[in-house]
Image 1 (cartoon, one colour):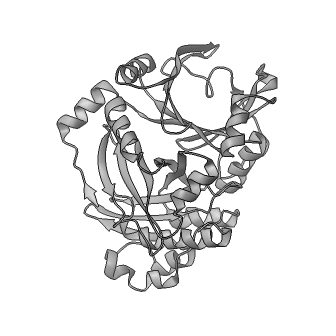
Image 2 (cartoon, rainbow, N blue to C red):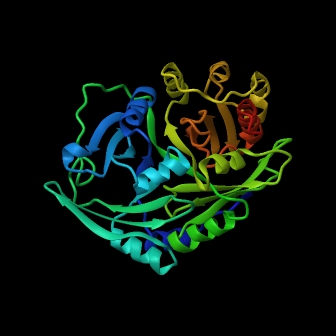
Image 3 (tube, rainbow, N blue to C red):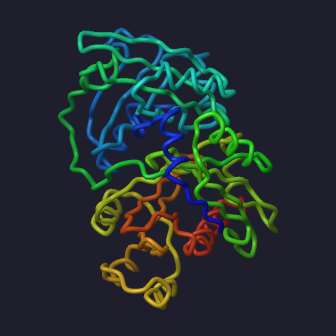
Length: 376
């Protein structure tokens, strides 16, 4: 693993030409938006926020928006055949289409990106309703994923113009998820550096970590990864590509079943991972499990921690430490029919890294799932 420090000058320069305040929303194209929203409410503790569809005059697609603390997920399905949304679902299955970035000036962000070589998805447009106006613009990134720049400083509505409040009698309690910590993209072999350069040159991101096949490998499979971060560190995008191995890696499997590059997993933060994971498991979320021997020498490897190791072992939560502190993390199994996207639950207690010490145990757990699916 290589670490890349960002100087204050570099951070300031990045923030000046492409300031990003955070993740605005993540939009999934799914085959049944109503059922997907219900799953995320029931199983993960999201609450109803907004709706767009036939009842709002939208005859092209239906979207349900759910929220938990600072996380907004949008689930969108087509209302008729032969649409771009439908073709996306047919090719990829359920998956992430939009990673929306909250900015102060969407036109400026778009113009800056285009001047640096971005490919336009749609030009800046102002959308209005009785609650004000929102400006959005979008660019292509890896695979069929797009970044939408969202400027909402003049808007007081529930989500976006064209959406209404989604009032539902069915609401569940939060599971303690707070915000999107990072999102990982899988790209084809030999394409990682192309997208690293894209985020550096087009969006002003910096590479903060690099993992090669010596860091991320098992007896059978390997991958390489580079972590990109924007100037203020609120957006982090690790980018993975497969590395040659004896068998098909998790990234190879993803690329095969997703039919191309895309978002592999979304890491969501919590302040109490034991409580969050306990609640998620009680609601039916399934997690990857590591052997109990992982915990035998845990304190020798990571030092003293605040949490009860027996509680971590019971749930299968992993621990790793860096020079700034430690983190706790666990990964769900895939959350749709195809073995593609999954979630990471993460609690940071000072650490700024991504769990390098857990890679081997995690990847062996992933390989056990691949073997059950017959895809290793």
